[in-house]
Image (tube, rainbow, N blue to C red):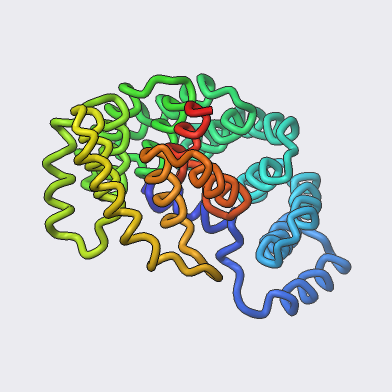
Length: 300
């Protein structure tokens, strides 16, 4: 239930539920709104505007929907992330707090807690955001992995790296998610739990066709073990693999992140900074290159 709910939340707020003839649908909905406006009609048109990458129009329609029907749950759920994306954090907080007061235990509560956590993250109040993650973990123990990833991110933000590694490890054991496992390995290497991570890294290196990300992880393990020559050998091998794989016109952003991190670990700070600047201007979520960003900041 929780996994499906959070997946649906992501679909609604991204506009992915919209279909191909978006412009035509907007015209049809506008005609209906002109005759007899309803909260559902405004919400539906907002979804289409979101698909057209017109967030301000979507926000306006969702506000109209909530004027007509303040309890319209779908409009609230769609509006809060859009407000955050548009930098309207104060309104997002006000609406998130109001929404929390209207929900009881069940899917709506999970939804409201996760939205509130995202608002507090946007405000830089990571301790408050974590409180909601903990509440979800307590009330809905079979929650989606996205909650665990969020919780670990909040722990990193407050400098609690060992606790972040523990959260990711527990979540990986519970779900079997490869994404969570890989995130845990990165977190474990950060806090020096090399002996736990290294056997998995070695197995992946033996089985994987593309090895660069695992070579970088093994290099981190070597560095922790003071095996600097082996670390640099792995990092150079990673860069040798990455270079021909990165398309100059349409580069894979995750490969750019790996390249930047490999260069950072090799002491090539200028190259690492160039990749970080590029990634910050891209569509790649910041969480995907947080190791690179933290490393560059520490090296300055």
